[in-house]
Length: 118
Length: 112
Image 1 (cartoon, rainbow over the protein chains, first blue to last red):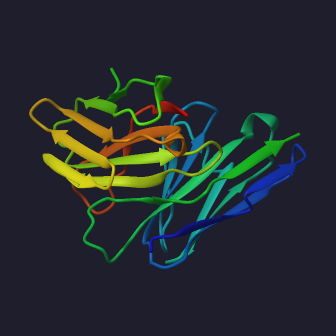
Image 2: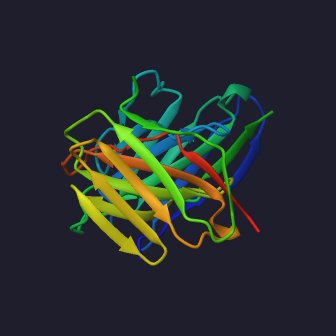
Image 3: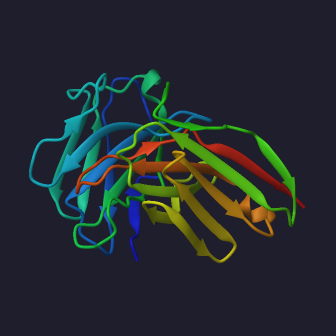
């Protein structure tokens, strides 16, 4: 149990285009999902916290107009990188926190999406 | 000073060795402690999860939490080449939507 999927796993796009990444919890409901960014050989950097049915909470320094987050259901959150530029190239990982389990604050991570902006 | 400190390594050990990975932290409010394993270009995988102080064992893995010293450890017995990965500690205070604070990760290589 506690499987999180991401789609796509790898995307290459031209500078100036927008890219949407989906994060799904496959076998549990998640009222809270998190979006992280990871550069090579570095740890995860939290970008935003996504709550179902409400606006996402962004970390300091993360542009909310550039990284649009939608959490439309208890099993799906999307991250859209708008007007992507080469400096947005990174590994984007989502995680989901089960809504109905007595496991404190455990998060389960998706496999990640590698974005390359040309 | 970072809230969570973790030696980035890299750490190389021979197959069969006992591996000790550690993190220290400064926030006494942390109550939940986790270890994740991350293979290259993959998402982190939850390995161990503990609440408050104490030990927890799962197969070849043992997690220890010493809240008085603000120190957590992950031990891997009989290490295998397949254990080669980056190990991330993570922790959080109580609360239904609390974010995790991660260590920087330790890169481990188990040599056959």
